[in-house]
Length: 295
Image 1 (spheres, rainbow, N blue to C red):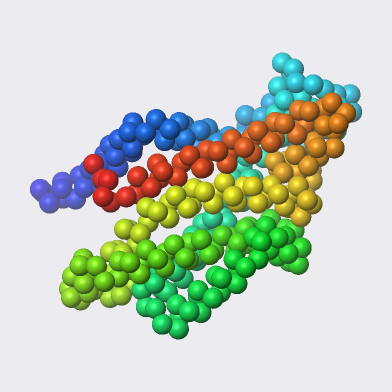
Image 2 (image 1 turned 120 degrees about the horizontal axis):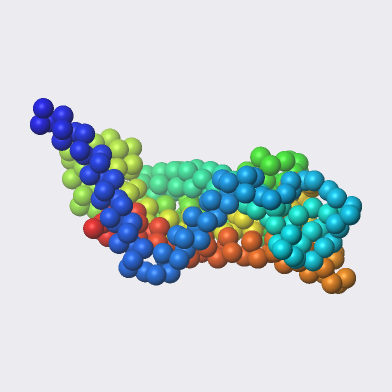
């Protein structure tokens, strides 16, 4: 009976410990708390945007084209009479989904390749290293443009292209972190205890190599959003009339000279806020997953 109670209490105690550590990280650095607050707002907009939008983001109305911001239309209307606030809000889900998907693929594939290269060395290390160097030899945005132009500007190809240009960051970092730790005392102890190489990598080395990579993940989230928006801006990204920040900035740029500044300003501010949030979030995520900072 006592064992059963302890087993049930263990996950609950782990959750309490995580919440306590999260609160400690947020109170220790006010900027981290601010970044987490902005992050929660962005996630909320992504999840609830279609229901919070006061207007249909795709509905056109010739009678209300190019109206300036007002109480009725907070961010004004565009050249087709669509509500800009509704489009900015709904676009959050798409831009965030592209960034999360691309960074997740880049992190999983890149860190796996880098960990293998750093742990085993040899010819595998050289092949993986030269492959990453080849990707880094290209201007990354130009490489993404080439991939999307060749494969087609579908949503999947935009995600794959963004993931490919981010692969070297994780592969190089994982290789360095694993190579430094592969002969550490706790690794030798795990090896002498009969643990397989994959268990040592997954449960001994990788958790200790994760904190610096969390900063990279946060930075890459911002870069991925900018990359997707940049592709849309030059016509290689998501196609209209789908609400997307890059498309909205591109369309609004044509109207700035005529005084309709709100068309490009508000999507641009949303893009800037998202990138700013993820850049701030990096240090907090590093402290959150760092085993040495557990409270």
